[in-house]
Length: 315
Image 1: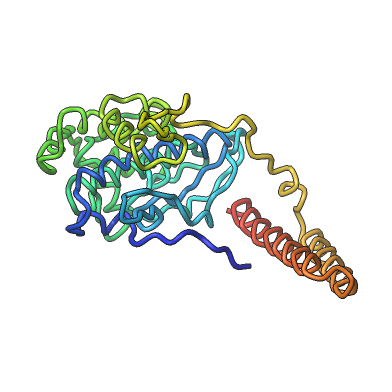
Image 2: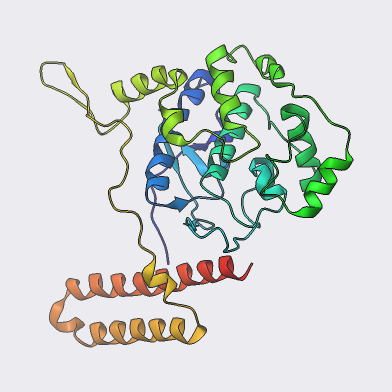
């Protein structure tokens, strides 16, 4: 299955290196990232691989999130295990690093916080060679977590942390990341980089943070498509800058596909539909080509989403 996407000239990781895009512009993309995540999280979708390479921007610094290969619907049942093989290590939340069997949309917020710090610092915030070392770098900044903070961790991870000498937090070091690390910027960053996922700021609350006010005004004054300028030169702003979906994503059809036979049955149905369309192609002309395209894409999407869902359930 092929998907045609809009062209984006660079990924977020390359924005600080570009002379044509100022670091301040890159930082203001925070409001766009948070807005996109607000919509996803309102649909109960976890991206689970937020990183600079998956945040694509054009020359005007308009950003879009890509690569939903690890995305899944949020699991409300905390007794059901979720895979830990998600998120690129540098942007992986501590609860996943410590073996949590269940996690929430807070893992995406942690990833955005890491990217925020990376844009301020102009290099990766937590760059380690292994998951254990990754956790060490996190504790050097946040300090040793309490037992309450580690309630989601597996027993082995808790024992490892308790055997080590306690470390005090050193959050003041965030002010030295760059000249762009203002008090408001550091305050928002500290709320995103919280060890306990239940205490981590949500995207809704992050969007209400004063640091993002300037970025929101800049984006909606000329870059967005939800606002417009009248013939008289007046800017008409939308009533909801960062909308949420009113209908959470329904994965019922996905949950029904629990066996290989069911997946093959769906594929067979797609093949029959494609065959029927092909037989009537001479009568329907270009319309048959459109139907055949939709049938093939439906078939492939069913297979792709089912395999992805099955892999999540196995781990």
